[in-house]
Image (cartoon, rainbow, N blue to C red; front, side, top):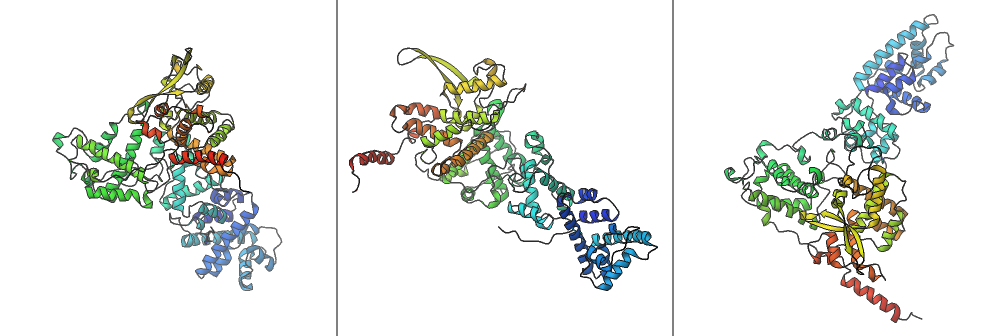
Length: 639
């Protein structure tokens, strides 16, 4: 996309720079102090062209004000006016000051301004400096502009720099500052032609004018993301009655639900909640937390739905949550199916970011169905506690649940998985790369959900003794897992996975055995750090998801065209689907690899065999494969 050229504006820094030069400050110091956003001072052509542009803009402004004398005056370079030098000719003087287009009379007048009589050269220079300073101050009041948030970046930054920023989707200063605040210190990553140095100079310039722009560069931008404390991130977005996360949302008193239309008798309410926000928090608190009191996947999923509903009720419907009717509920369903763009944003915008939004886009029928089920559950809880008198979403029909084979479109073939497996261990050897490799092996080998693997600890592993089919003593490993609905199950673990974990523990912990009591609290996917004395922390859900997606993208770049599309789409949940499909159907030609349906059902944590059986090859697929074998043998080739 071609970015249109826009006339650049003069800001106070340009005037300060030129005043410094007129007063005799050396060029490099003046450049670094006032206009380093223009580029490197070591680029002599850049410096020369920038000074020429500024002088030309000054002169043009003076002409517009019918001040030809001032226009001539600001074009004179006082550095050229020195004692004991041979005076230039009038033509040389005009060329040096960029006055070729002026009349000869105007050139002569400027020449006299610059040099005067032969015996008064030094005093004439001092007078010239004084007059230029006065002229620059007059021009600054006349034409200097303060940047505004809606200004195109091209009117303030150099053309090349502006083009790169605009091409990256930031046409205005508002959009630029929003990206910087949203992504933090490394906001510039992914913008071609902009590195850390240019990025730091852009921020310096924006900070200089942030009071004029009316937008502040957050303090969090000054440090890498990993060095920021939670309170520093929390300060990025202020609490408001706006599209902000639940923990930042300020309920207006008149819409807080303390006097909701469908509130039950407060004397019979079993909740201490005084308003809708507190009632929602009580509902979320009734769900089992994650390890160490952290937010569990269930709480996170439920919070997301309650958050959307509360924001919509207050901001769009202008009603308390406890005043919503059946008709409101019907409108809400349509809203989720087709939300406005202002409500949507990337899933990668974290909750501390100003770009966070409650939705990514329209909800697909299956996702919308789950959303309504959770919202129904919220109102059922509130009704059961006598907080509200009814459930408006109970009367709203759920979207029909589509029936399809669970893994039919999100499963890797055996050949694709084998290619991915060969790529494991190819990255540079470090703790993060090894952790990603282990995560992918665990997800494929066990069929665990992302959250289940992140929450797994060494203390959840146990070894059991048993006799094999031939009566010989044997042993095996199990991982105790708490899955959906707080249901527990035991999932077999491959010995090779334990050995890989043991090798990591040998590097970072006192004991290499994952079953040792001192390792019981160590996460299976721990973020190990050499020399660390504190207990290693678990990999975050988003960190694991992003790492797997990044690895699959790298694999896709190396794969053949036919497989690259599927591999690039693969996520952590694809590995769960792939585990189920490969285990149940077995590799073609190797029926002995098939795992019994009931075993796979347990690995996945399904409530019924019917759900697990959806991973089996469909009847149509089985027909095609069987007939393909028949055709290959029985139908002769055409002559």
